[in-house]
Amino acid sequence: MSEGGRGCVAILLSAFNGEKYIAEQLDSIIGQTHKNWILHVSDDGSVDGTCDIVRDYISLYGTGSIYLHEGPRKGFAQNFLSLVRRDDIVADYYVFCDQDDVWLPSKLERALDSCAKEDPSLPFLYCSRTRLVDEHGKPIGFSSLFSRPVGFGNALVQSLAGANTMLFNNATRDILRQVPLTANIVSHDWLAYMLVSGCGGKVFYDPQPFIDYRQHQANLVGANAGLFDRLRRFMRVLGGTFHYWNESNLVILQQFERNLTAENREVLSRFLAARRARGYKAASLLGRSGVYRQSRLEDWAMKMAAVIGKI
Figure 1 (cartoon, rainbow, N blue to C red):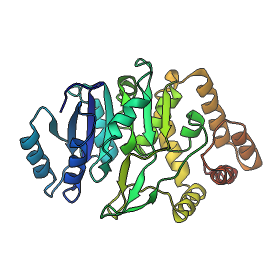
Figure 2 (figure 1 turned 90 degrees about the vertical axis):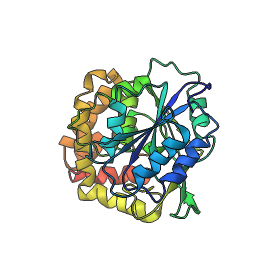
Figure 3 (figure 1 turned 135 degrees about the horizontal axis):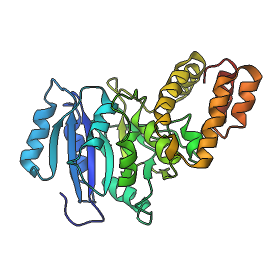
């Protein structure tokens, strides 16, 4: 499928026991209006018919369009990053792809439109809202719509959009390839948002959805869009899970501190100071740090977590 167009897109699909939905996803990729793409599927140890389905598509569309690789078997985030690190995958742009979603025909074209005038030497990351569908593909709503600015101050404490919506350039790929193999990655989408914004790149958040994000019991990460999900996030903030996630992200960030802009190094320093403090002082330092979440309510919950040392 790599013919003509405005640049070749490498589609990086992480697969694991996905025989139920992966054919529908592959069909939606083949149906893209932007045809200049190459699909790389990394299977992370499936014991069902996933690989057989992918091989059927390779036979049908040719080895020049679809490739099947063996994943590292260290979880979905490392499986995605194993594709990012492969020297034999070369393209102008890259997209993460889940095995059980469905792409609208103009998904790739829309993402490419957003970066048409961007400097390719600078990190760029496109992401978007999603339409939520049930396991049968019936629409059931949308992911949260964010309106506050995107940036490192937000990325330090919040993942903005799912990796399944993301497109990025080679400058961003070069950053992601530096993530240590031994890193404890909370989520690769959060990590990409944090590193690109922190290192002076541009993040473009599209409020329009171009992907059907399937919600089902096998989902490792859901959309977190409902009232119950917001309550669950609040409890995670106060219960210590948020503190653990931040700790894991900050260990990785230390590897990139020299790549952060001077302004973002200052934001990071103030955030670290707030994490070390307790009580009212911690909440006060957090409020002046430049760190924020997309919801005012979640900002308040984060300050309460700071008071008890849980950020």
